[in-house]
Amino acid sequence: MAMKKILIIEDETIISFSYRLQLERMGFEVIGTARSSEEAEAMLATEHPDLIIMDIYLKGPKTGLELAQEIHKKEAMPILFLTASTKPEIVQAIRELPNCHYLSKPINSDSLDDVLRRFAHGDQ
Image 1: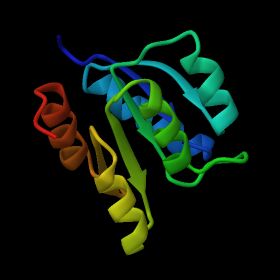
Image 2: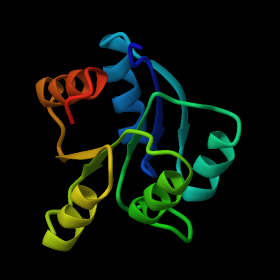
Image 3: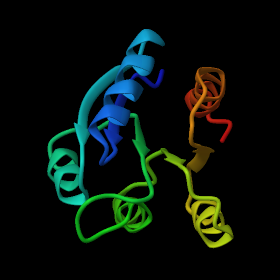
């Protein structure tokens, strides 16, 4: 199955919009954007993306890592974290989650394209 539907979870509107444009130019369908863990949980109750692109730090009571852990209790959905954080504990926590990867901000289109192709082919 080709990965096409993506949910963006990013609290900065301008950054989220930029990701949406990049992804749509690459041929992906962005099925929604959420700015907080609550918005994301509400969307995931009705939507089933092929991939989630998520920031580590979100508005609301949960971080992106906490939200990813909750999502993975239900399903090991692929998640790509886009983060400016280089804290070793953050990187390690991402690596411990199944079906997850991360890119450091600022994101370049080639790196994003490469990682998305690996997800699409199951090569995380």
